[in-house]
Length: 225
Image (cartoon, rainbow, N blue to C red; front, side, top):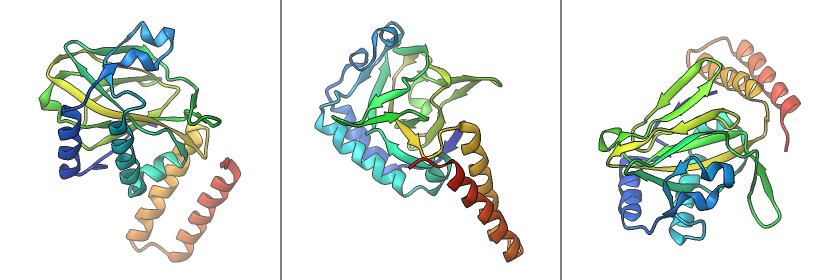
């Protein structure tokens, strides 16, 4: 499921992120991928050990915790601490599939079910840089306003188009969901969304209760904790 989640960060938060990132020391993004990824990746990242990466990552996680839409769409069990990248001067990332298992800590790992990109500057500030996600329905180009998030299955083939003017800044991270299967997550998300609409529209309380029960029983059936 490819889903746009608006305004994860508000304008003052984005401005503060930009102020700090504009003064940051960046490193070659190929340092954080394997040999295959390094062949198609041309960008810059905040070093994993950077205190700024940790600081801004905590701010992203705090913002996500306030987003019911993010929770409904991803049903997060674990979230990899967010990273930050910069594309400029032709920087790009060729077609690839994200690694299936990632190190979360010294002795803990994360299965990547959902990939997330949080845009940190406006599309008009740069040319190119679209996130292009390929699935059975074709290729989807994504370029969102600053502060908005896109989530999509980590199994998707995707790339970042070359940035030919300006610089594209973003945070990116992965989620291990309580529900591994993308089709099941989509079904639960659609049920959750329908329940909210029915409730807001004053639908019959008993019918809403029955649908809510179906949602939770499916989640109970499919969830891994």
